[in-house]
Length: 545
Image (cartoon, rainbow, N blue to C red):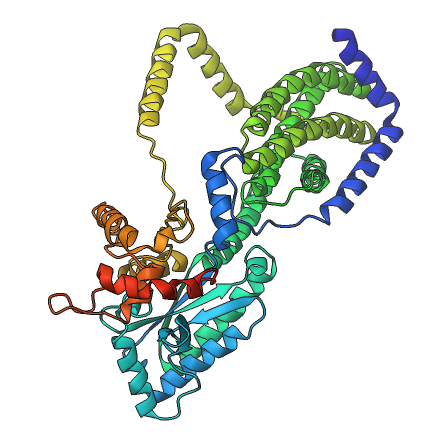
């Protein structure tokens, strides 16, 4: 093994031009590939494809369409039903609806109203307003109609009547496409213009908006993190080696690593996710130690005998082997993610592990070759070898290791014990915006809508009755369904209301009772039997929301 590293050092230094040419070709190739990199706009797929819950979720989407496709715009005002404000609100909905990539828009200006066609024995849907209102009387009539449709309370408007929602549904293609970002930004601007023109405070939420804003903020923070990592490591190199040349060539290694990481993402057919976006900053903190160890050994050997080439050769032999083992353990650490089954972790594990070894090879080849062409290190550059403060710190550590082993072991046991106890307190959570500061606009708007409408994301239940038509039978609806509804609503944290196709369908027949006005409930068996023949008209209909 010793002979292998000796031969490797001789090969690198004897074929410097060839090695640099090959490294340049690799860098150019990776740069071309990196230019093709794309961001992923899909929700992160954390669960393995073989997981039953993942399969259930995919089958649910296949049947009912992509979930989380609704952007919510909330207008906070007591004057929504003033003619001028309502006209502008109506216009906003029409403009958004005619925007490319938008499937539908629902607000109190165009609510669907379900009616019975007795002659055709089917349900038909009309708009609560078929054209832009021209008089205050028309707006007042719309307001009264909405009051008589309790299904929309806490859904389109809140109890106090001062917050009104507009729900914008994106089509299936747009929701996971780059165009979603531009559409969300345009819709937000149009809504804010409406708010400014009518002195209305606007709030935004819904998965398309949260995903767009969250991705934008995280991308900005990742870029900032990368710049800070480069800046801090460069400062450390400058202080330690006192040489601008060291900083420059170390940064070249870093840049090669970053470009290669993006190129590998493209070569494997991956896209940049929030997790793989962490790889470039990781490359910075992994590649810099390689450079430090190689140059430190080079300076140490040169100080002993003054032979530059021999010092570089020894640096490759001695440090190259040590760095190989260190980088190999990091390679294995990241590589295990490739065996998790989670697409998100698999992609991260493959790209990160390959880049760890690639950046090791780049450092091992590039640094010795470059410094073989540069002048030998000066006394100023090698002063770090005799730095009094650093020597004092290392001497103190050496003293403690050799004279206070028992205390060190006790401290380590205490730390491990505390860590194990902390692990038992870990809780698995799945908040939508758990990574955002509490004063962030995304978080505050989400909480505002939760306060007024009990949340943005619904909990959806699919009821499979196994036989065609059985799900709509009066017996199943009045017994099984009502029992399930009652049980679910008893769970802590669940809003005491189900919005279902049958609730909506029957709400216009018996919307109220004297004891509980504006309460939705299923009619009795006799009324359900009368409606049974109307159910066929709802089969296969798409959900407007």
